[in-house]
Length: 109
Image (cartoon, rainbow, N blue to C red):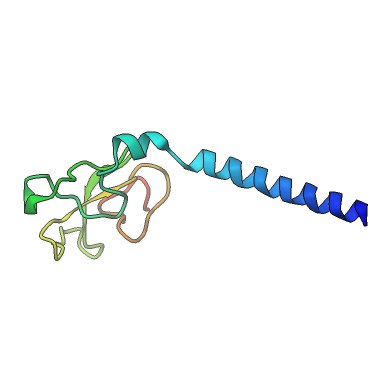
């Protein structure tokens, strides 16, 4: 019985340690403190002057790309009146919801 309790405690400690490492690696206080109003990946980019928005900068490590039609690589206007979007273009992964071969050829082949 005692052995099972110790084993259970050990398993719980390992799980807590793994979760702690995961959250520490993926959680950035710097981003929360300095970029709390930044535009996240996949969100429409609008300058602060447009529609009275306060947010006007993409979050850290993101760039502004144009939303493009894949069929002919032409710009496609969004409902919000902007054809720009913040993206992690250049990170080696094609975020297929907003990146494609036209607006981020280095990630999307």
